[in-house]
Length: 228
Image (cartoon, rainbow, N blue to C red):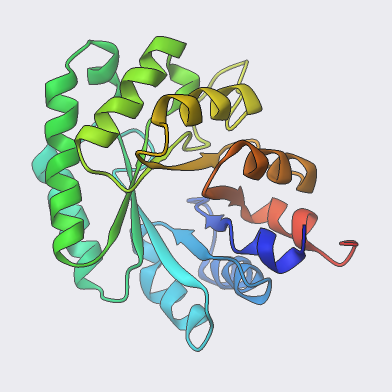
């Protein structure tokens, strides 16, 4: 698979809260130079990212209520509106309140997603919902897919990359296969978490993902000078 095609699937994630301004710029520019679909940043880095991507084809994705998704819906909506007001935002990646999902409070989950999707779509911004699959059972993952579809999200996304667990799968082939089979084309799929090699990315694309979240330290490994 050609490098430019692989790059078109990648949301280049620059989300480490410890990064300095100079480190943020350096990491964001890596994604731009490789022609990634987007750079994905925290809200505080929006202005930095906009400067770095100016004049390129790389778009801007911003996380919301990241990484836990536990804020009240009014808070999520306020943050999303503040992100949108910055202008030129392509997509927002919001973390689902997966504690509600695990409590079988599906209508509340759907309500939150619906409010967020309607706000985003009013401003022509896409919405991805991060469901944190490593915290969910297979049945809960299926339920999360249905909630995202009913809430009119554009994408379901697997992981934040910040869950603490001894056994993290992230966007494993088994998880992606389960989501794709459940979704049946009704929603796009973003595989995120543990996508650290070209082989894994190609495998996930072949399984049916529409986008991949790749940490900024892994983008070079996947698309770097050793590519052949």
